[in-house]
Image (cartoon, rainbow over the protein chains, first blue to last red):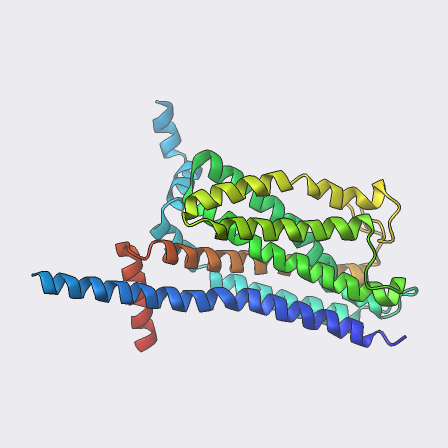
Amino acid sequence: MNHAPFIWGSYAIATIVLLWTAVAPLISKKTAFKNIRTFNRARNQSRDANS
Amino acid sequence: MKTDKARKNPLVMFIHKLGSPPWFYGFTGKFIPWLWAVFAVLTIWGLYLGLFKAPPDYLQGESYRIMYIHVPAAWMSMMIYVLMAIMGFIALIWRIRTMEIMAMNSAPIGAAFTLIALATGSLWGRPTWGTYWVWDARLTSELVLLFLYLGVIGLYKAMDEPRKAARAASLLAMVGLVNLPIIHFSVKWWNTLHQGSSISLTGSKIDPSMLWPLLIMAVAMKFYYAANLITRSRVTLLEQDLRKSWTRTVAEDATGELKS
């Protein structure tokens, strides 16, 4: 039996899972920064409108 | 008097500081590039030795090389669960928010390692045992571990109030600890298709040329966990403290860094 597909298949699965687990929080970080900026912009605008 | 002494203790001071989200965010951020760098170096080194330098096994041939990802992933799946339960316990007793966040962010990383352990074990099982899956005690208890991780993640996400959710999920994590001795001793307690431990605290049955890459990979995965956990916990802090002034400063600094 040729073992290569099982070996490389294992490493491919591990790479995909580990890569996704590492990249997912970076995407969330981008979204979090965007939300923080949007929130602060809205707060500043409402403050300016009230003053 | 005792309180004054405790306040001056550097460890107590450090734990107190760790409880402050802005301090935690700034302090841990410095380590992330180094943790990823060490992980990358160790992984390249370990895989080079394991995949290209170590000799084939006399019985299993080349297929044993799956061990260099399967075994560290399986070890990590159990280690992360224990750490998650400990952090959950600390969070329940001392109500430290950063601990709650770290406990909850351990769950997806632990689930990822458990998934890798199960998938690579299945791929290793086909050429070795002639089957991808068998309901033996080791495999089944590892699958239960994956369900426990998914349960913790699900329970945490199911509640609107993150602190309440973290406390409930921490309790579940602690209850699930009972599965860990079952996973570890399953190969001794039952007659399983899965082989027994080749490495113990007293020694190893593996030849050093095959053992070293395994140990290097095991250490590399610990750096992966640390880097990933810190990254995730910092993001969760940003998400939870969206309305607080310190996150505005952090977001402005990040924008400045991108523009400059």
